[in-house]
Length: 197
Image (cartoon, rainbow, N blue to C red; front, side):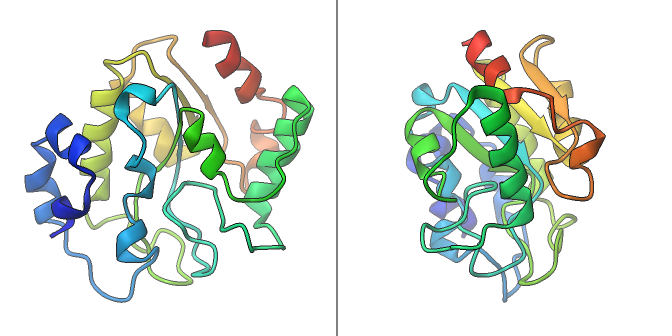
């Protein structure tokens, strides 16, 4: 059962999610792997300072790793979306990560959450309608009661602002090549988050 895969501290934080996750029908094949589905939930809740919300895992099975926008360290050619994030990061605060693996961000209090935690290999938004959003809604509603700042990228993430207190989030276009020039570039999400913190 999916609820059993959710780290214990989150099971205790949102016990109501058991019902939501138990109803979720996850048909094979899916990505990321079962043990990576809840990778974004590993750090203690008390350490979450910023929550960046995206859409769903990269459709490339070699890229999906359970952290929104992150790819494994061994990936040399970064997905275009991540390249755009790094471009904005460089322009905003002058920082360029050494690799596409954003696990270090997680260790620094950034939760990298997708609105859907799985997808079908090679199909973007393949699991957008199986019920993940009900779970994500519960997670965001819980975090929104804590001193957490939210960065919402794209239409799917934007819908979650209804759970978040005014002034505690920023919204922009998704960093994918299809939408990055419609308000992602120049949105300065990183410096804004730093200022709020």
